[in-house]
Length: 171
Image 1: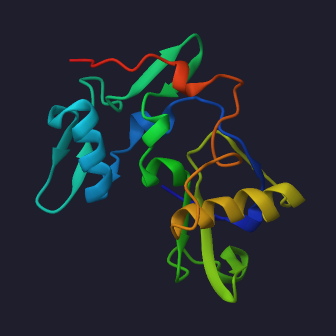
Image 2 (image 1 turned 135 degrees about the horizontal axis):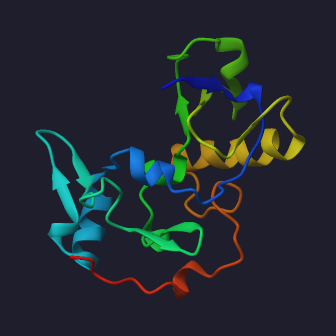
């Protein structure tokens, strides 16, 4: 996968394609794992030697991915893991993927490095819009550092109340 500095992106909007939920394993913090296990059971998660993950369906997609018409929706929207909230962005303290000047984002007197996974179909390349640079990227950073939990710019805005989607066990 190729990571692109945020300054090469004009805008980003989730288009509910579900690619992120199909192509990637979701790493959970212990607290996220605990909340999911309490609500949905331990069988909705899996482990490796040193990490906790959301379980995947036999087709490889996340166990909480639902399809409604042409949209792919998250059944964990009300307790979505941080890794899911941040995708397709990576917020780093060092320029791990190069282009430090283009990836640099000043936030509260620090410089953070923001990259996007180029496989995301919601990325629009070009000069960053004011909203993307000053609201969307900032929201991703605040989620990454734990200063914010709720999402508005960093999630799909499809006019549905996610809490109205029935959450059912799928095994």
